[in-house]
Length: 370
Figure (cartoon, rainbow, N blue to C red):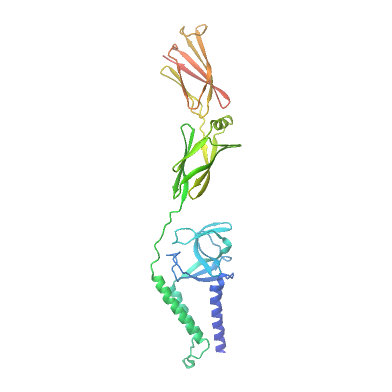
């Protein structure tokens, strides 16, 4: 009876080891045991460590957890989750310089809940095998069932122990930090009165070869850039004048520049926001001059100006003691400044300037004091 019970224990022991180690690779077992064979998770996990995992269908996992996913029946990976997004995930070994390839969340079989060092679990395993398979009674000597099989198995374990111990004592390979090619936006700004839009990049291991396409987008309008060129990590875009006129006439301030860049290694497609700061014309009287400045990338219509003052120094129409002088309008070009001489105007005079801005007529009034 005791011999029968021992055989049952021996067979159950073997079945459990197979089920939770080899079987865990392709069966939905609640617990799995895996041994680490490399330095990818060093120093969190070392070669020879026994990893204990709980089935992912039992306990949830999240970013930062160490999980086990199987590539095939013979290969499983123990790495840390760095991203989980719906049906896919990204993992990385703590000692690896870069992330692993994208995997499906369905391939994640276990969440690691604990580890046992090699020098702890292997001696315990050997002791338990001796206790279960070797005869307890000295009188039976080497005649007990499974003795030869046990002997061969123990020799195999001892050889593995010797190999793994030597392997563990080795120094892990030098940590390599890869400088992956990357390109990111550094800055956006207009130059030369919005005639040039500057898009600066910060690149590592990449170089812009050329601009394949360049489009300006504002609501329903999409037009090509007038011209563009590459200057190192900088792209200079030149919008056509009619584009700014469309923005102004439709009271639009924001627009996008869509670029398709050809790089040494691949292509980059990006959309970059810009804003036009529409401002009314700047008018001032200084040094006996009327100064009108247009701070916009579109022409501004000056409808005209009128001077009203006292005295007889004006070549104008007389209305009692008030003298009035009117001048025709003109177009003030983008970022242009016009200066009108007022030195011939008598003291105590006023000047009115009318202009159109966003389809509305405005009047500016200034006083001339001499």
